[in-house]
Image 1 (tube, one colour):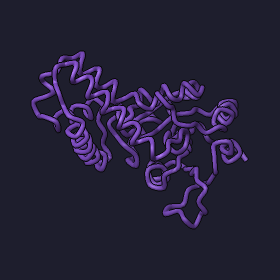
Image 2 (cartoon, rainbow, N blue to C red; image 1 turned 45 degrees about the horizontal axis):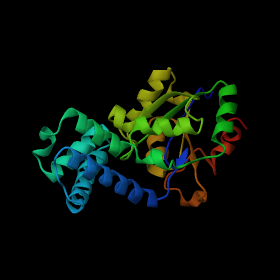
Image 3 (cartoon, rainbow, N blue to C red; image 1 turned 120 degrees about the vertical axis):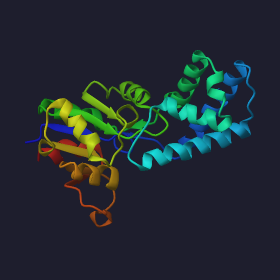
Length: 243
């Protein structure tokens, strides 16, 4: 029996081209420069760019341990890379504005959603399946990812949304799957995870005791770990779960 389906966000529900990273970075740094100047602090774009990269390396070290931190910690790490004494010099209003500027660029030009997702979710809900999101975040926090889903009409079907920046755990650690399933009262054996990544999604969910359907156009021979099923897009999910 399948009582719950957990769903990855990036590369499964929502798609963002690699070029978006540079666009988001440019927007963040432009806003940081203006906000700091308004607070009476002049920081050059070159210094901000260097600090952005340094903070990214620090956050990546945390991610490699399958841990995560709130996006405010990204901002503080960036400011400390500019000057270790900078964060204490900022008022709470300026810091809040910087966190918002760091978080929101993906809302300006929202990434694309899987066009078959809404129809698939309607069918799964009709079958009585509980839908959840289990996803790592990068520099865009779960708060904003919820807004992106809502813009596409894809937020309401989900009972629980577990994002790594909010729970402090990243895939492929099985705990991020387990804490989600505990919240809906479903055992791993009663759940299926859907995602695109062979390590984060396939390996992670299988080690959590779940079955996995991988969303990919690659042939089965290319898999480093065999999923329990393969679909090309979410429109194929209901039939894959209930043939």
